[in-house]
Image: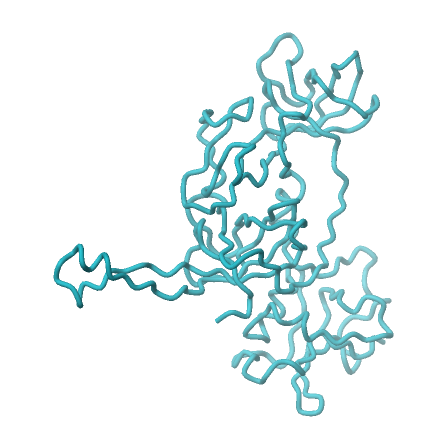
Length: 371
């Protein structure tokens, strides 16, 4: 029933942009992403939105479902990818009602970054946990906690409890991230280090924002002056004095965005941190110092460049001091591609979609079509 829907119209792409080992057709399966599908056909998967060919008969031609058949055809000699042409694939009417279209990323894998993490511009003004029932130092599910400064919420409303986990800095220096204590200061060590990269104190000129990681959820049970009684309904980890509290965020996340070259603010924009250790590999998370205020949106895509080393010419000079004085800067080297999937005011999280070498804090962002 479905008419030919052009997914990629390659009028702007030369034949060389097609993978030499591309299939003639591909059947979409559950768990696929738009990037993965494009990568089966194109050398540069991030280019596919630029050559999108919409079918005016279809309200949302960008929505692709498991069971759809993608074929490579040639129209006027130009390679084009179509969905369900010649009556193939699964018609809209035949799909189960709960069928979910293919998104830009694997939602299941990155859901913690969509639900459990926020970045805020300062956090000490946020309401904070001042105690737990019966004087316990730590709280957990089915306990009651007490929060000071919670305003604008009514009894019965949902709240979330967060812990400061990182102060991000735009410098991008490759240094160890600092764990934070209950006041958000930089001296608490609990054995868990989530980021490696640039860290600074709020208020510094390099400050980008503070990451808050959700530790629990609850509902307002009572209000007394500036103190709220919260019944804990879910606990990811134990709640402690000094954790911050905010109204629960709604779902509000659209996974059906497309990749597009991201804006760049200046000639040298560094990766400021990498998640889970010193380096990030394929499909891991990095933090970049650009956000919605700089025009970044979900789908903004960047090349990642390793800065070229500066090397003294020890062939031209026998003396070490002379060699160090006569240095040559090596060219930057492309090591991967990253796509933004969550934005905040002045920074964003991005997925390392493909990389030949590890990605470190301090590497540079560039236009995705950079060599």
